Amino acid sequence: MEKVSENRCFDGRQLQFTHRSAVLNCEMRFGIYLPPQAEVRNVPVLYWLSGLTCTDENFTHKAGAQRVAAELGMAIVMPDTSPRGEGVPDDPDGAYDFGLGAGFYVNATETPWSEHYKMYDYVVKELPELIEAEFPVTDKRAISGHSMGGHGAIILALNNPDRYTSISAFSPICNPMDCPWGEKALGNYLGADKAAWAKHDASYLVRHADKQLPLLVDQGLADNFLVEQLKPEALEAAAAESGYALKLRRHEGYDHSYFFISSFIEEHLRFHAKYLG
Ligand SMILES: N[C@@H](CCC(=O)N[C@@H](CSC=O)C(=O)NCC(=O)O)C(=O)O
Image (tube, helix red, strand yellow):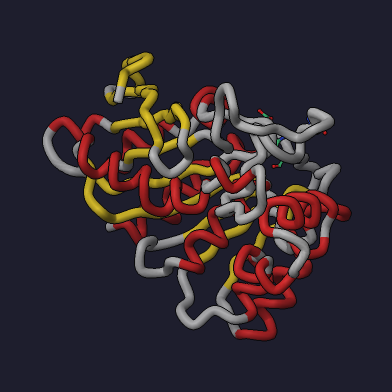
């Protein structure tokens, strides 16, 4: 692991590292915010999963989460959104919604993607192992994300409910089995058989959840992706059917940008702090 940068921030430290990922078979970069409490004790961790086209830096620079994380004594880990580097295949047309910057937090099974695109295992296992070995953190983990990352947060936690205390999402892709972004990504990474897609669909998992984790979702009503790609109504219907205690809030006038995230990130951090202890 190699340190790329370190900045003092609200009496804590904003850090960026590169490391070799065995799971992704490439060099990866991540950000981590360590609050001031981490100087004297181990602190719990929120994993933040970003959306299409993002790196670890979008949330670090634009969400404004560090002030409240410093108050709450919470570390935040920001992984990248796909494998990177020479030799990692990308969308053949260079589209923003597949390939580099668009790993969709799944383990690809189809060639040529399966050689590197294993973001599910990277976020659930490899990265936490590294973080918990190298930094003053506990094994209490919460997970949150935006859009593709909101989808990632929900599916990773509901498939691994004993590894996370709570889930939240901004503008998540709620039903990737039934929207253009999801159909393209799941079809290419996992193949044509839709049976393999279901455990990567937030609405399917909420409908079939054995164990409920606290789940908060915020959605802007001026979001240009709302109707075609995000479909919060599918998640709501699934929750109503299964009796899942989903808290889904709609916000007039907010769009898909980090201006929306920065407006409500404090509430998400306080929500997770209740369960992280
Ligand atoms: N370039 C695309 C839109 C890409 C976009 O909006 N990305 C979002 C996440 S979308 C879902 O996963 C994002 O977070 N962008 C980075 C940022 O800092 O805002 C287009 O032109 O439509």
